[in-house]
Image 1 (cartoon, rainbow, N blue to C red):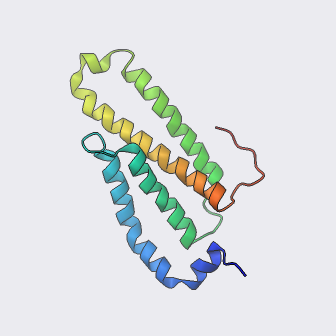
Image 2: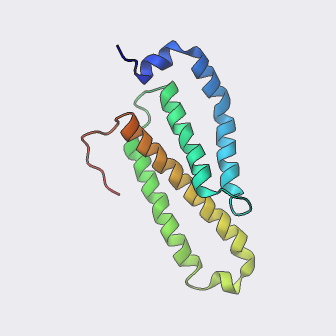
Image 3: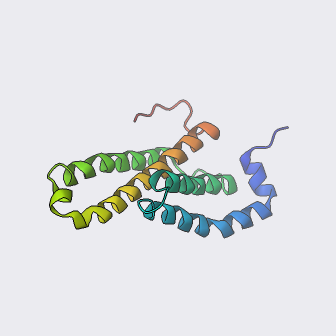
Length: 141
């Protein structure tokens, strides 16, 4: 008989303790990679992938229904809209050309938006496809 994720979580106290211990460090590492992305290789996508592992680890340790993939997908769409609107607000009027000192702030904000959006996006993809959440539901981009 195959084991599902809830059987694994109930049987392994070691898994629960390790994930509980690593959770804040994974969160810190994800935001560190996101916020230093315009200075070093990495940034939004890589940091967002680290943040997505938090959602997956949380689900593996405690596979309850309190992680709603529909709500995560809604947040992902909001951050995608912000990613599309922010350059239009900053770049088209020529703020970066007129005020070059805001460039690092703009890059940091864009890295943060992309990182959180990727985190939600990968988290939703894993929760829906790997753990078969939301099968049979219709969802849109």
